[in-house]
Image 1: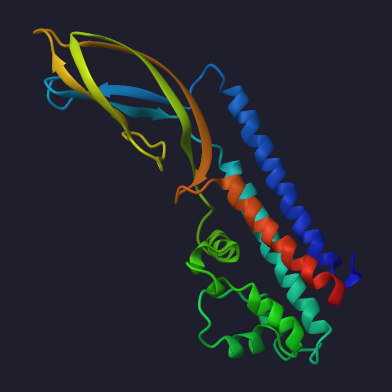
Image 2: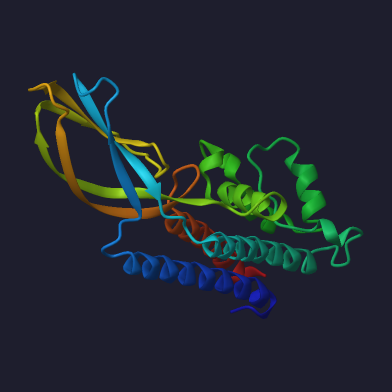
Length: 259
């Protein structure tokens, strides 16, 4: 490992530490919830069971705030690993004592408008060979740019730092219902397709059919639910963080032998 990039690698390793710890926290929480589902369900009918009834999410078990803080710690260190790399690129360039050192950082751009000016601001004095690599990893080189790991990092870390902690929610990976229905002739059912976040009132399944008597149908249900943890945009938390980490590692590895 290059001594010049030791700080960048240390930040990346610390980010991975937080991701691994978060994964263990989630696994432990899930294990503790065995026998107690992370959300309840309610059965409703908008038309007195004349044509259908609905299974909705009932009360939801709150997820620990600690997870959001751990995500923020990981994001901060991922971003810092790239910024520490940027500082070292400046140090081995033509302007190792830049006029505005607080502006030095690894640029992350969704478009290439004004990219030369931005590179000059963020990476003053850095050589063409190094700049070419930085430009190659910019999100604007893929479509859509917003799905690039660095774009996701920039968005998540910026909001976590300047707005609020990243909220996470449960998202069902699998759910299976065992139904016992009396007084209702079932004809078909529809399951709400993914992505689906676990929020009170969310419709899970709708059963179509008709009542077979005057009394209100009796519906008994048991179920098994497998829940994953996702960001508000429905992307999985752990896989997103691992993808960001993998991209940062690729970038550092490419610069390692030439810095």
